[in-house]
Image 1 (tube, protein in one colour):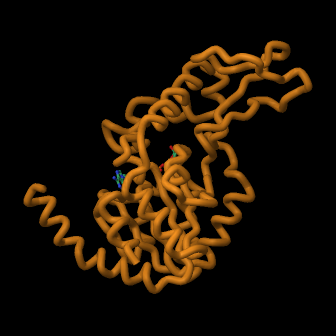
Image 2 (cartoon, protein in one colour; image 1 turned 180 degrees about the vertical axis):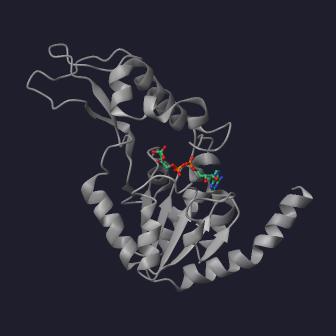
Length: 255
Ligand code: APR
Protein backbone atom coordinates (compact mmCIF):
# COMPACT_ATOMS: atom_id res chain seq x y z
CA UNK A 1 0.00 0.00 0.00
CA UNK A 2 1.49 3.37 -0.95
CA UNK A 3 2.05 6.08 1.68
CA UNK A 4 -0.80 8.08 0.12
CA UNK A 5 -3.15 5.10 0.38
CA UNK A 6 -2.03 4.51 3.98
CA UNK A 7 -2.58 8.18 4.77
CA UNK A 8 -5.98 7.94 3.09
CA UNK A 9 -6.86 4.93 5.23
CA UNK A 10 -5.73 6.67 8.45
CA UNK A 11 -7.59 9.80 7.44
CA UNK A 12 -10.76 7.78 6.96
CA UNK A 13 -10.53 5.95 10.28
CA UNK A 14 -12.67 8.44 12.28
CA UNK A 15 -15.37 8.44 9.56
CA UNK A 16 -15.36 4.64 9.43
CA UNK A 17 -15.81 4.47 13.19
CA UNK A 18 -18.68 6.99 13.12
CA UNK A 19 -20.42 5.22 10.24
CA UNK A 20 -20.02 1.82 11.94
CA UNK A 21 -21.57 3.26 15.12
CA UNK A 22 -24.50 4.74 13.15
CA UNK A 23 -25.06 1.36 11.45
CA UNK A 24 -24.99 -0.46 14.81
CA UNK A 25 -27.50 1.99 16.29
CA UNK A 26 -29.86 2.14 13.28
CA UNK A 27 -33.18 0.33 13.36
CA UNK A 28 -33.96 0.70 9.64
CA UNK A 29 -31.24 1.10 7.03
CA UNK A 30 -31.69 1.74 3.32
CA UNK A 31 -28.73 1.08 1.05
CA UNK A 32 -28.78 2.73 -2.38
CA UNK A 33 -26.10 1.35 -4.68
CA UNK A 34 -24.79 2.28 -8.09
CA UNK A 35 -22.26 1.01 -10.61
CA UNK A 36 -19.34 1.82 -8.30
CA UNK A 37 -20.13 -1.12 -6.01
CA UNK A 38 -19.49 -3.48 -8.94
CA UNK A 39 -16.30 -1.71 -10.08
CA UNK A 40 -14.06 -3.91 -7.88
CA UNK A 41 -15.67 -6.97 -9.47
CA UNK A 42 -14.36 -5.72 -12.82
CA UNK A 43 -17.56 -4.19 -14.23
CA UNK A 44 -17.05 -0.76 -15.81
CA UNK A 45 -19.05 2.08 -14.31
CA UNK A 46 -20.86 4.55 -16.57
CA UNK A 47 -19.39 7.96 -15.76
CA UNK A 48 -15.86 7.30 -14.57
CA UNK A 49 -13.61 9.15 -16.99
CA UNK A 50 -11.81 6.95 -19.57
CA UNK A 51 -13.08 3.63 -18.11
CA UNK A 52 -16.84 4.29 -17.89
CA UNK A 53 -19.27 2.98 -20.51
CA UNK A 54 -20.33 6.53 -21.36
CA UNK A 55 -16.73 7.39 -22.22
CA UNK A 56 -16.96 4.86 -25.07
CA UNK A 57 -20.63 4.92 -26.08
CA UNK A 58 -23.38 7.56 -26.26
CA UNK A 59 -26.07 6.77 -23.66
CA UNK A 60 -28.83 7.88 -26.04
CA UNK A 61 -27.59 5.40 -28.65
CA UNK A 62 -27.19 2.44 -26.29
CA UNK A 63 -29.67 2.92 -23.46
CA UNK A 64 -32.82 4.28 -25.11
CA UNK A 65 -35.75 2.84 -27.06
CA UNK A 66 -34.92 5.18 -29.96
CA UNK A 67 -31.34 3.93 -30.01
CA UNK A 68 -32.52 0.32 -30.02
CA UNK A 69 -35.01 0.88 -32.83
CA UNK A 70 -32.33 2.72 -34.83
CA UNK A 71 -29.64 0.07 -34.45
CA UNK A 72 -31.07 -3.04 -32.76
CA UNK A 73 -28.14 -5.35 -33.53
CA UNK A 74 -25.53 -2.92 -32.12
CA UNK A 75 -27.53 -2.34 -28.92
CA UNK A 76 -28.46 -6.02 -28.52
CA UNK A 77 -24.80 -7.01 -28.87
CA UNK A 78 -23.76 -4.40 -26.28
CA UNK A 79 -26.14 -5.91 -23.76
CA UNK A 80 -24.96 -9.43 -24.75
CA UNK A 81 -21.35 -8.26 -24.13
CA UNK A 82 -22.37 -6.91 -20.70
CA UNK A 83 -24.22 -10.17 -19.83
CA UNK A 84 -21.13 -12.19 -20.79
CA UNK A 85 -18.88 -9.86 -18.77
CA UNK A 86 -21.06 -10.13 -15.66
CA UNK A 87 -21.24 -13.93 -15.99
CA UNK A 88 -17.43 -14.06 -15.78
CA UNK A 89 -17.02 -12.00 -12.60
CA UNK A 90 -17.91 -12.52 -8.95
CA UNK A 91 -19.52 -10.33 -6.31
CA UNK A 92 -16.86 -8.46 -4.32
CA UNK A 93 -16.37 -7.84 -0.60
CA UNK A 94 -18.77 -4.91 -0.76
CA UNK A 95 -21.66 -7.02 -2.11
CA UNK A 96 -20.82 -9.81 0.35
CA UNK A 97 -20.68 -7.47 3.37
CA UNK A 98 -24.23 -6.29 2.58
CA UNK A 99 -25.53 -9.85 2.16
CA UNK A 100 -23.90 -11.05 5.38
CA UNK A 101 -25.16 -8.05 7.37
CA UNK A 102 -28.68 -8.78 6.12
CA UNK A 103 -28.39 -12.38 7.34
CA UNK A 104 -27.22 -11.23 10.81
CA UNK A 105 -29.95 -8.57 11.02
CA UNK A 106 -33.01 -9.87 9.18
CA UNK A 107 -35.37 -7.08 8.13
CA UNK A 108 -32.99 -4.26 9.09
CA UNK A 109 -31.81 -3.46 5.56
CA UNK A 110 -33.67 -2.46 2.40
CA UNK A 111 -31.32 -2.69 -0.59
CA UNK A 112 -32.24 -0.60 -3.62
CA UNK A 113 -29.86 -0.80 -6.54
CA UNK A 114 -29.52 1.07 -9.82
CA UNK A 115 -27.41 -1.82 -11.08
CA UNK A 116 -28.78 -4.44 -13.46
CA UNK A 117 -25.85 -6.88 -13.08
CA UNK A 118 -27.45 -9.16 -10.46
CA UNK A 119 -24.27 -9.21 -8.34
CA UNK A 120 -26.14 -8.32 -5.13
CA UNK A 121 -28.41 -11.33 -5.66
CA UNK A 122 -25.45 -13.58 -6.44
CA UNK A 123 -23.77 -12.37 -3.21
CA UNK A 124 -26.82 -13.58 -1.28
CA UNK A 125 -28.83 -10.39 -0.78
CA UNK A 126 -32.56 -11.13 -0.91
CA UNK A 127 -35.51 -9.01 -2.00
CA UNK A 128 -33.23 -6.57 -3.88
CA UNK A 129 -35.16 -3.60 -5.25
CA UNK A 130 -33.91 -3.44 -8.85
CA UNK A 131 -34.76 0.14 -9.74
CA UNK A 132 -33.36 -0.08 -13.29
CA UNK A 133 -34.35 -3.66 -14.13
CA UNK A 134 -32.32 -6.77 -14.85
CA UNK A 135 -29.67 -7.34 -17.53
CA UNK A 136 -30.41 -11.06 -17.64
CA UNK A 137 -34.12 -10.74 -18.42
CA UNK A 138 -35.76 -9.82 -21.72
CA UNK A 139 -39.24 -8.57 -22.70
CA UNK A 140 -41.03 -7.78 -25.97
CA UNK A 141 -40.25 -4.36 -27.48
CA UNK A 142 -43.86 -3.96 -28.69
CA UNK A 143 -46.98 -5.40 -27.08
CA UNK A 144 -46.82 -9.08 -28.03
CA UNK A 145 -49.50 -10.57 -30.31
CA UNK A 146 -50.60 -14.22 -30.43
CA UNK A 147 -47.93 -14.89 -33.05
CA UNK A 148 -45.08 -13.60 -30.87
CA UNK A 149 -43.02 -16.62 -29.98
CA UNK A 150 -39.30 -17.28 -30.21
CA UNK A 151 -38.30 -20.81 -31.17
CA UNK A 152 -34.62 -20.23 -31.83
CA UNK A 153 -32.54 -17.08 -31.38
CA UNK A 154 -29.41 -16.47 -33.47
CA UNK A 155 -26.54 -15.36 -31.21
CA UNK A 156 -25.70 -11.73 -31.87
CA UNK A 157 -29.03 -10.74 -33.42
CA UNK A 158 -32.01 -9.43 -31.45
CA UNK A 159 -34.49 -12.35 -31.21
CA UNK A 160 -37.66 -11.43 -33.13
CA UNK A 161 -41.03 -12.95 -33.95
CA UNK A 162 -40.88 -14.76 -37.32
CA UNK A 163 -44.41 -13.59 -38.13
CA UNK A 164 -44.67 -9.91 -37.12
CA UNK A 165 -41.01 -9.00 -36.51
CA UNK A 166 -41.57 -7.84 -32.92
CA UNK A 167 -38.17 -7.94 -31.16
CA UNK A 168 -37.14 -8.88 -27.67
CA UNK A 169 -35.33 -6.13 -25.71
CA UNK A 170 -33.37 -6.08 -22.46
CA UNK A 171 -35.72 -5.74 -19.45
CA UNK A 172 -33.79 -2.71 -18.19
CA UNK A 173 -35.02 0.86 -17.69
CA UNK A 174 -33.80 3.02 -20.59
CA UNK A 175 -33.42 6.78 -20.48
CA UNK A 176 -36.84 8.42 -20.67
CA UNK A 177 -38.63 5.35 -19.29
CA UNK A 178 -40.42 5.06 -15.96
CA UNK A 179 -38.96 2.97 -13.18
CA UNK A 180 -40.93 -0.15 -12.21
CA UNK A 181 -43.77 1.45 -10.26
CA UNK A 182 -44.12 -1.01 -7.37
CA UNK A 183 -40.34 -1.41 -6.90
CA UNK A 184 -39.72 2.33 -6.80
CA UNK A 185 -42.72 2.81 -4.49
CA UNK A 186 -41.22 0.31 -2.02
CA UNK A 187 -37.86 2.10 -2.23
CA UNK A 188 -39.51 5.47 -1.58
CA UNK A 189 -41.43 4.09 1.40
CA UNK A 190 -38.27 2.55 2.86
CA UNK A 191 -36.32 5.80 2.32
CA UNK A 192 -39.01 7.80 4.12
CA UNK A 193 -39.01 5.43 7.12
CA UNK A 194 -35.31 4.69 7.58
CA UNK A 195 -33.02 6.26 10.14
CA UNK A 196 -29.87 5.69 8.10
CA UNK A 197 -29.19 5.64 4.37
CA UNK A 198 -25.91 4.37 2.91
CA UNK A 199 -25.33 5.70 -0.63
CA UNK A 200 -22.66 3.50 -2.20
CA UNK A 201 -20.95 3.86 -5.58
CA UNK A 202 -23.26 6.23 -7.38
CA UNK A 203 -22.56 9.55 -9.07
CA UNK A 204 -26.06 10.60 -8.01
CA UNK A 205 -26.64 11.92 -11.52
CA UNK A 206 -29.77 9.98 -12.53
CA UNK A 207 -33.23 10.64 -11.10
CA UNK A 208 -35.58 9.56 -9.69
CA UNK A 209 -33.27 6.89 -8.17
CA UNK A 210 -30.77 9.44 -6.81
CA UNK A 211 -33.65 11.38 -5.27
CA UNK A 212 -34.12 8.59 -2.71
CA UNK A 213 -31.24 10.15 -0.75
CA UNK A 214 -33.14 13.45 -0.58
CA UNK A 215 -36.27 11.60 0.59
CA UNK A 216 -34.32 9.92 3.39
CA UNK A 217 -32.70 13.19 4.42
CA UNK A 218 -36.00 15.09 4.40
CA UNK A 219 -37.55 12.39 6.57
CA UNK A 220 -34.84 12.70 9.22
CA UNK A 221 -32.39 9.94 8.29
CA UNK A 222 -28.64 10.31 8.46
CA UNK A 223 -27.04 9.91 5.02
CA UNK A 224 -23.59 8.36 4.57
CA UNK A 225 -21.91 8.39 1.16
CA UNK A 226 -19.28 5.77 0.27
CA UNK A 227 -17.44 6.89 -2.84
CA UNK A 228 -13.76 7.52 -3.62
CA UNK A 229 -14.78 10.65 -5.53
CA UNK A 230 -17.18 13.56 -5.03
CA UNK A 231 -20.77 12.84 -6.15
CA UNK A 232 -23.92 14.76 -6.99
CA UNK A 233 -25.37 13.78 -3.60
CA UNK A 234 -22.51 15.09 -1.44
CA UNK A 235 -24.59 18.08 -0.31
CA UNK A 236 -27.15 15.69 1.22
CA UNK A 237 -24.54 13.68 3.14
CA UNK A 238 -24.03 13.84 6.88
CA UNK A 239 -20.83 11.87 6.34
CA UNK A 240 -18.72 11.25 3.22
CA UNK A 241 -16.33 8.32 3.30
CA UNK A 242 -13.79 8.69 0.52
CA UNK A 243 -13.12 5.01 -0.06
CA UNK A 244 -14.14 2.08 -2.20
CA UNK A 245 -17.11 -0.18 -1.52
CA UNK A 246 -15.04 -3.34 -1.11
CA UNK A 247 -12.73 -1.65 1.42
CA UNK A 248 -15.32 0.36 3.37
CA UNK A 249 -18.48 -1.78 3.57
CA UNK A 250 -16.89 -4.72 5.45
CA UNK A 251 -15.62 -2.16 8.00
CA UNK A 252 -18.86 -0.28 8.61
CA UNK A 253 -21.18 -3.30 8.36
CA UNK A 254 -19.22 -5.44 10.82
CA UNK A 255 -21.81 -5.32 13.61
N1 APR B 1 -16.41 1.93 -4.81
C1 APR B 1 -17.37 2.89 -4.64
N2 APR B 1 -17.66 3.82 -5.58
C2 APR B 1 -16.97 3.77 -6.73
C3 APR B 1 -15.95 2.81 -6.98
C4 APR B 1 -15.70 1.86 -5.96
N3 APR B 1 -14.75 0.92 -6.11
N4 APR B 1 -15.45 3.03 -8.23
C5 APR B 1 -16.13 4.09 -8.73
N5 APR B 1 -17.02 4.54 -7.84
C6 APR B 1 -17.99 5.64 -7.96
C7 APR B 1 -17.59 6.72 -8.93
O1 APR B 1 -16.82 7.72 -8.27
C8 APR B 1 -18.97 7.27 -9.36
O2 APR B 1 -19.37 8.30 -8.48
O3 APR B 1 -19.17 5.07 -8.49
C9 APR B 1 -19.90 6.08 -9.18
C10 APR B 1 -20.38 5.49 -10.48
O4 APR B 1 -21.19 6.47 -11.10
P1 APR B 1 -21.88 6.12 -12.49
O5 APR B 1 -20.89 5.47 -13.38
O6 APR B 1 -22.61 7.35 -12.95
O7 APR B 1 -22.95 4.99 -12.12
P2 APR B 1 -24.37 5.20 -11.44
O8 APR B 1 -24.36 6.34 -10.51
O9 APR B 1 -24.78 3.88 -10.92
O10 APR B 1 -25.30 5.56 -12.71
C11 APR B 1 -26.69 5.60 -12.48
O11 APR B 1 -27.01 5.95 -14.85
O12 APR B 1 -26.37 5.42 -16.97
C12 APR B 1 -27.35 5.21 -16.01
O13 APR B 1 -28.76 3.34 -15.82
C13 APR B 1 -27.44 3.76 -15.63
O14 APR B 1 -27.93 2.81 -13.46
C14 APR B 1 -27.11 3.74 -14.14
C15 APR B 1 -27.40 5.16 -13.72
